[in-house]
Length: 105
Image 1 (cartoon, rainbow, N blue to C red):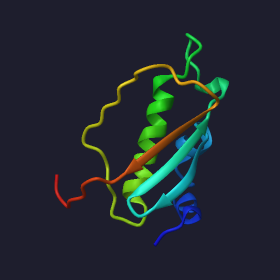
Image 2: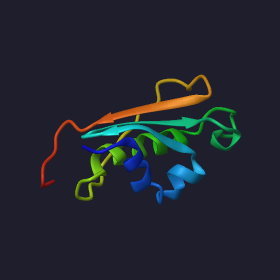
Image 3: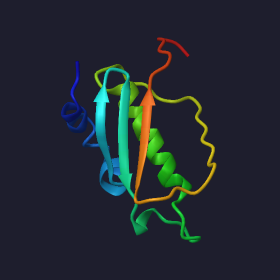
Image 4: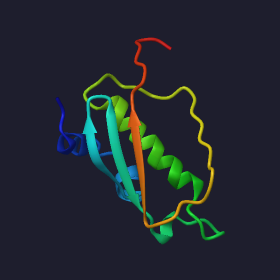
């Protein structure tokens, strides 16, 4: 079983997510992850709301932690996000869990 600290150490070289976006791995375990991102002015777009790319980066990184830690490399072939409304508050939270895992496309 893996620990959250081990996951943090494994992904510390993912500099865009951890250094630029400020994403933190809050929980990591077998086939699951929870990550957070504190919203700063660097995450805002010209309209004064959180940029979609920042939100997508949080979701994508959480997927990466859930599906890659202590496993063979997994990448997405296709992904999609729907923005239903602007986020409120100072911290965004993303949760991911592996639903199906195969060795082929």
